[in-house]
Length: 253
Image 1 (cartoon, rainbow, N blue to C red):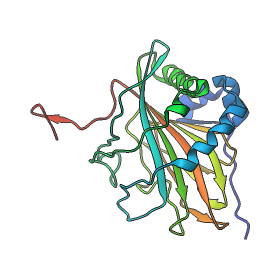
Image 2: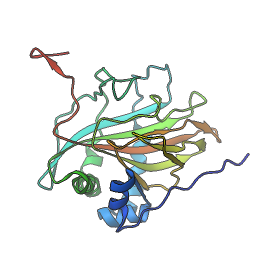
Image 3: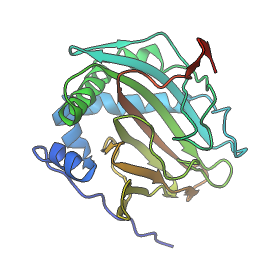
């Protein structure tokens, strides 16, 4: 059976920032991302192997075994990107009703990948995009390598459902789709009944989201081959600080 895929609405090199400001999201193809961020397409292809070595996510509350990931944190200030000491990932329940409210300790992105010039170029460019959206300031960035697979017969890219991440901007970079159907992206206005659906299929294309104005989700994936998976790089960009466990009376909750 053939599944119809809705193509993402394209943004232009000159107009993507306006699209992001006007509608809360923008989509760039692989060639555009490479051109705008100054990336080497061949180098990006070599990154793909690192998604084959992601540890299992031990925190899935739905009992699934379909997600693998790594996570590292960075600060971008005055054009300089610095990795911070490894820290757990935390979200409040207000933004993640399924996995919020707990410290999740994931293995870091490998030093080999972080040391790549194109890694630094990509995150620096994303910070620059967010500065165009919110004004120039230091940006607190969390990078997540995800693999969602069909080990359980179905894989859920967003088991928490349609959500915001509690940041200023989210970038979802599609790294690879293999042997699957589904994985449709859905973007909804946060304050009115308006939305759009499409499927990212081109490796190294990117979806940029104004996390204040829109909510998003990706539908489950199903196998079309013996081994099916969807690899993404998700980078969140936040002003002020990382999301951390709130302090109560001087002690962590």
